[in-house]
Each structure stands twice: as structure tokens, then as C-alpha cells.
Length: 277
Ligand code: AMP
Image (cartoon, rainbow, N blue to C red; front, side, top):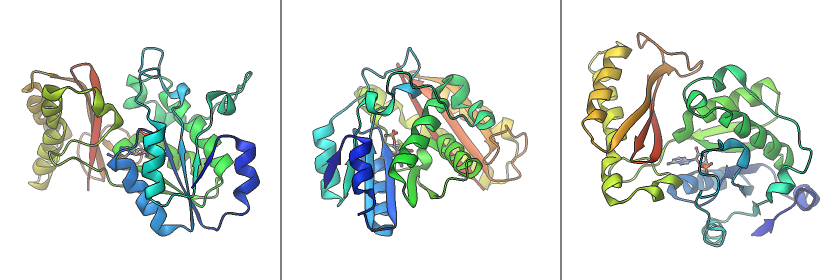
């Protein structure tokens, strides 16, 4: 496994990599969710590149960029065990040199859900992902359904900018209690970790109601709200049932619907989602 820190160094060896090249962009502090993407990419591609870069431009001024968990040594050991060929872990100045002044934005899809709660977040995400795709030049790039809106926005960017690669979206990996695995789960204390199960419980209620024939999105949201409000450590940021393509809110569930939510457990903001077909 080669660890590469500069764009020039990567470009030098890019032409010697066997194709197809799979690419998994991450912010590091790897967990089973990331590893599921790495394993699938390893199976389907002859070369595998993973990036580790905590992207400052996708964090708001009051968000956790400085305290975001990092452990590069541990990440490198894990990725070596998974048979990754190249780790790309650039510095901030390598990706954003002085005078950097170009932004990529998928405007409509970014102005909903997480985009309302985190202004500028998706502009940072699409800019860094576009840059990474231009640098790595992969045949396939892998993303998690855990960040459903991010995956939709990246697919739209790839389509609108005619980028020549396939975006693969893989299912959310959960703990035994249903909590979606996330780097930010380390912020939860023991009590909060237990309370955090409420997100998956609420999503399950939505799924059960829909399977039993309920199509009224507002009614389903109300039931989810009740469940979450029964947990004293939880406070709802948003609950949404939206068209999974346009992310427009739905009144009636008549097409694949994205049920998504953001909930504070104590001070930690967690997101999760499921798709109703
Ligand atoms: P991050 O390091 O948080 O930027 O995540 C890197 C990639 O891993 C993104 O495509 C995420 O959607 C994906 N990911 C994060 N958590 C999970 C999970 N629990 N299951 C599946 N994919 C995940």
C-alpha cells in the first residue's frame, strides 16, 4: 500500500494503475461503514484508492472541524489489511492553496434537509468530491446510503458535469441495536449511546406503518415525532418524507420515498434514513 500526500505524486503513478480503478473518499477515523465500501470496491476493481481528508469547507463556523476525530495511523493499518493500493491523504493547503476560488454547487438538491440545517455544507462536499474525482480519475466511486442526500447530490453533479465514472451507493451499516455507525458516535456517552437507538426505532415505525398500507406522510411523521419525543435525551432537528429523486416533501407516499431525520442526542447531531418503495 502506498501513502500519497500530493496531487503531483498521484498523477505520476496514475497511469501505472490497473483499471478499473475504484475510489472511496472518506474523512478518516474509519469504521465498519467505511470498510463495507472499501470491501465492495476491492471486489469489483483491479486498483483501489481511498482518500482520507477532513474537508474544512464542508464544516460550518460553529461545527466540529477542529474536534472531528482523527487517527491516521489506525486508518492506515485497517486499510492495509483490506488490500487497498493507494491512500491519498493530502494536506489542507494541497487541496486549497492560497487564492483558491472555485466552487461547485448542485443548487436545488442542496437547499433542502441537511442543506437548510447546515448552510454551505454541500457546496463544500461537492467542491471537494469534484476535485478528488478530477485528481484520482477513478472508474467507480463508492458512497454510503447513510448520507442519502449527499449521494443524490453527487450523482446529480456527476450527471450534470458529464463526469466519466459510475457512482455506487451502498447500504447503511448499523450496530446490533440498529444505530447507524458514524464517526460522530464517539461523541456519545453511554447513556446517550442507548438513547440514540431512538432514530432507528422511529424509522422502523415509518416502515411498518407504510407496509401496513399507510401513505399519509404527515401521519407517519407525527408517529415518528411521538416516538422520538418519548426519549428525554433526544431533540428533533427535522423529520422528512421526500421524493427520493427530487427531495421535494411528499404529502402522499406514491413513489420511492426517502424518510430521513436529524436528531440531537445531547449535543451530538445524528442523521439517518431509509427508503420506502
Ligand atoms: P465520511 O468519512 O463520514 O465522509 O464518510 C465516508 C463515506 O462513508 C460516505 O460515503 C458515507 O456515506 C459512508 N458511510 C459513513 N457511515 C456509513 C455507514 N454507517 N454505512 C455505510 N456507509 C457509511
